[in-house]
Image (cartoon, rainbow, N blue to C red; front, side):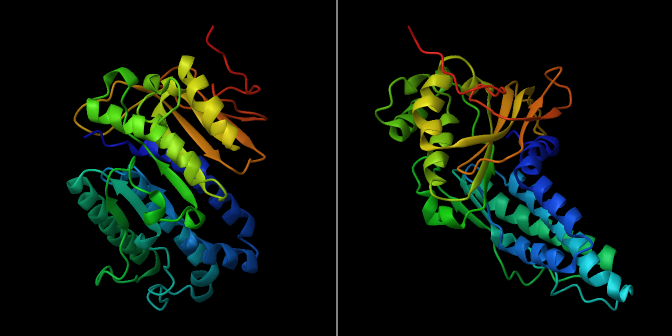
Length: 321
């Protein structure tokens, strides 16, 4: 298995929600009412990975959310008592694994994802204990992560989590080029795109984008996927983005241009990737992450417009002729 590196997961979750939440925390630090509003907001957020594998994206997202909650708890409650051991944090840690949803086709991986979230919950409880002197109990298991073992390309995502209840859709759908698909994968792509002309040249990940585009219609859901870079190059752009996604009113709010993929599995996935953040709501401050070299650190730049080629330019599409 190719386990996504934490560095690459953070490239998704930080611009998708953590940067905004941390900025909100900094603005609210000295305003009790605003801080309480943010504190009440965190346990209401939901996170959905429709290709979750062993749960790496959900695990890191949960860990970062718990750490932010700890910062808020310290500001709101701990500084008042300033006495480690006398401060009861058990009922104040309200972010929980029940806020996390996933679909995974492999039964074993789905089980691992559930267990990984439970283990991360326990680790964060220990972290809270070190910080505040006590913590909430890891057992008995009161809340459970919602990991569904199913095929994300045929399952109705709304049956697991209705779109209007989903805040963030994220993940790393499978990396398979159009020419490398097995017969059953070609059948899945054909089912998703049906009568779309030219779908046979689309990478496997394109199917997740189209389902996601339909899923987030009429919702405030923010979405971000890691993808093979070829869906933003050449003929795939005109097939996937022009007639389908962008015509649905979808906006590209942030993106990483092509970078070299790295993972923590036994084998290194030899692939170049992009990261694309989309939603129905257009963000005021769009961000484009560029790379001087394919394996260097990203450089963030604020831009006015992001098109399907992931450049700051109008939505122009190159047609066949």
